[in-house]
Every structure is written in structure tokens, then in C-alpha cells.
Image 1: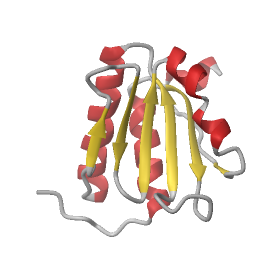
Image 2: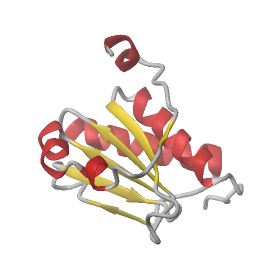
Image 3: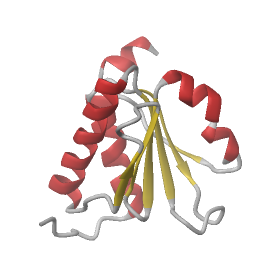
Length: 129
């Protein structure tokens, strides 16, 4: 069982973003929704190209969160459908979209008043940007 190491929400969101980047997710952004949402502090929003990549991203994030921060998601939704999946960690929520889903839902525009957290991809996605 994971032992929560008490990391701040922002650190856990950054762990998720780095893990998504390690699986070549693209368009990675972290929105600070504190003060705008009573549900969570941060949204981590990423794009994956297909169902297989969505699964790989979700697995990498969960593994990194358990290893580094000692937390597991409270729930995972949509992983079977593959269009849009999310992991709810309580103080941050990860949204993994296929490109069509991200274009359709435009979640980042729903929370466009939320400041963005500085995150610079390190993997191949950074070189393509």
C-alpha cells in the first residue's frame, strides 16, 4: 500500500506531468484551479495519440505517484473507452485525451481563468515544439 509522503499538490501535479512526458504525451499543461474549483487544486491535461498510449500514460503516472509521492488515484474513469480518461488524486486530477477529444471538450478553455503552472517537457515532445 502506498504511504502518502505529504508532498504539496503542485509537486504531485508536476510528477504526473513528467511521467506523461516520459510516455511521449504532448500538449502537457497544468492549470492551477485553486480558488476557482472546490473539487481540486490542479488539472494536468495531456494528449495521447491512441488508446494504447492513453493506457501507457495512465500507468506511468500512477507508478510515478506511488513511487515518488506515495499516493494512488481515488478513481480512474474512461480508461476503457480511450477517448478521454482521468485519474482523480483528490488535490489534482489528470485528464488524458486523444486529439479529437481534447479538441471537442476544450477543457482548458472551461478553466481559462486558471493560471498555468510552468512545465517544460524534457522528452521528444519538447524537441518537436
